Length: 244
Image 1 (tube, helix red, strand yellow):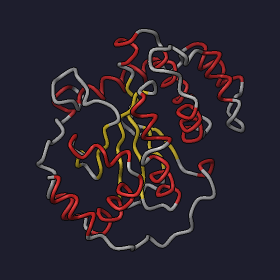
Image 2 (tube, one colour; image 1 turned 120 degrees about the horizontal axis):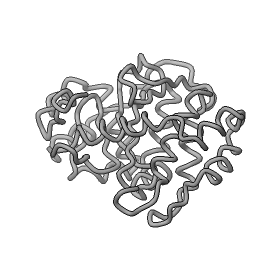
Image 3 (cartoon, rainbow, N blue to C red; image 1 turned 135 degrees about the vertical axis):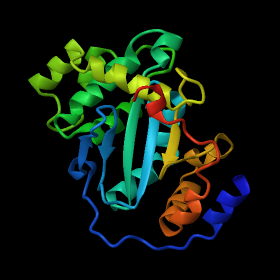
């Protein structure tokens, strides 16, 4: 798998999809998917789909989003070449204690009501506390919401303080667990699934190398059939097997 994927990347060209880019994340379309657990960001006609499984307290997710491939992924979304699907896990609360993952996921779902998910998601990762510190408190989440224009409304504040979207948080965690290699155990975060093909663990470094990652996205856009031929490698379990 490593050899063939890197060969695919090495052979990619420079074709871009002709479109006018969004001016900012504030203009990027976003919505909740019909399954009720996935948040969709970007032009839904984009040829490449990146599905990310993240826990907001995960330091590796923070590395991906801030200094790794995340910024390039964001630019690809703004160019309308890629759309992103997010499944927000919250397993770290049970693993290291606290409730920050759940609170952050709830707040992000509330931000979606104001079409501010993508902007708030970026702000939260830019201000992620240490994993062992349960720093995503109500007060901190509301303070950080002040960095996103138009987000900190009475409705948003109420949603944060009351955990309005508790059921969403629980369902999203279960959806994450359903795609792990073992029932009830998620695949680790961040996990990226591109056009239904999971980026394998031995290629996980591509998520932290922006140059290689953007080449991979372009290669998949140009050679979708070849990328799909790798689907049988480490296939994702069908969530339907676990009731989703």
